[in-house]
Length: 305
Ligand code: 3PG
Image (cartoon, rainbow, N blue to C red):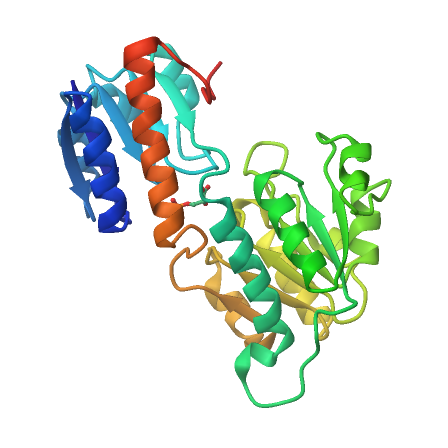
């Protein structure tokens, strides 16, 4: 059995060692394709493997087509919008993610971004504090919930909106639940996005929605760039010089946002899951899920059901 780790943005070495230990203990062979620069390298590497581990690497129909022996692909992370699920399903390939494994790293970054934007992106000048401010969390999943807990510890008033989580559960955890998403934006000084990128969410964070935020509002995006209506948000930032946007995923129109200087910041390369701990957790989970799948048929975390 051959397992390929194909990561344009590689895991920390310690995480790769973790994968190796699990895979080799099961008697399988590990193959690494790291920092590849041409998709053809991916097509060639996947040609004879039985299992594949990726991060944000795009598993396209062409990749699937090149992988004649592939039985399982695991996205070591939460968002699986990089996996072409119809192509996986059509080829009897089980697709999985590793939910929760890198969430703490992303949650810590979201909190760090709030502080960074509140303190004038660490440039001279008087900033503001998080204490007593309202934070609106859009989607109360693994990351959203961790952000909520950390924000509460900082003395923030936490609100959350998630149509898929029972209101009672969120309220029991000390979170205020508005009736609508618009109400979340209208009431919160910060909004932290934790929604996946899919047909329902793409371009949904738009001019009118963000425009509901109160004076000095700040949007934090550690989710996906695709959920932002970039033209609408640029227009809004032009109209209102009090609003801020901080993102871990550089916008397509980076130049269009860069003119806002202290009111905009994008990390040079996605940092959310870039901690040793998150790398280790997600990488080892992915390797264990592959071994469990082959040894016991376990399909927990399958996303193409
Ligand atoms: C995720 O969906 O798990 C995060 O966005 C991390 O993505 P990465 O593995 O590309 O850093």
